[in-house]
Length: 339
Image 1: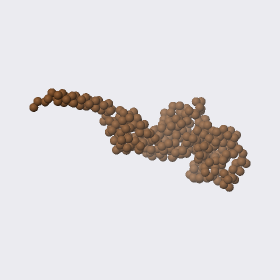
Image 2 (image 1 turned 135 degrees about the vertical axis):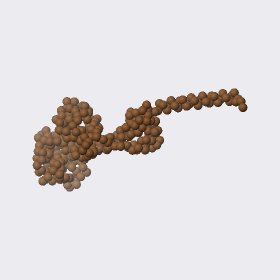
Image 3 (image 1 turned 60 degrees about the horizontal axis):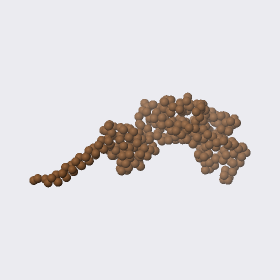
Image 4 (image 1 turned 90 degrees about the horizontal axis):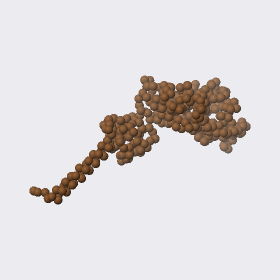
């Protein structure tokens, strides 16, 4: 049976179109497939990234060629709003396959949380207790773990450097480099937060003093708006040679002896300790915890004030006064519920 010439031409045209479409599809497919397709790729995703940022990190690591397509597939399969931080191990490929691998294989991760006010041991305990892994001391002792502009400001006492780590929750790749990763990430965040405020001519000794002051402000204040004023009060006391009389330092002194107190009595304030700023003038010998960003801001830029005293109210805020007589009156009014 002979095919009509018109039909034959239509069939040939259809075949040519199909071939062209197939060629375009294959070309697009090749563009979507990374050169390292099939190879395992590790991608570390830190907390707080949105879907677009996560997809961009996968593209940067060579898992996909198009972060836009990956973000689209993450949305299609419903993982764009519930991305877990950690280290993903996926095979490089087309965005759809990578997105599905992300949803089916949970990331491996070590979460290390630095809380405002945390002590050295509390930060160290957030990492693996495996003695074969590098310790937090070792990681803090490596200057290369800190941003280069920070290095001249670092204290020589390794454990003092804990104050230069920004409180946050960090996702770390499990393994023997987690302590180094934590110091790099937390010190990098600290520099992002405070680098512009730090004077170019600042000396290490000055920064250590600021760190100690910031750590005291951290423990004294519950409300961020009070922190610059408290820092101003302590700065005034230091300039006048007055004792700081910080209850937070007394609490710390007792804690160093294994005793936890939540309020300071008259007898508590008699403890013989270099950290007791009721009996020793000036700053204590080292910081008493990790300062928050707002406490560091307060220590770096204390409020200019005439105030020399403050007392806490029931809601956590403070009443600031110029004289001791005003201070005593404020305490009486607080007890009577007038403030």
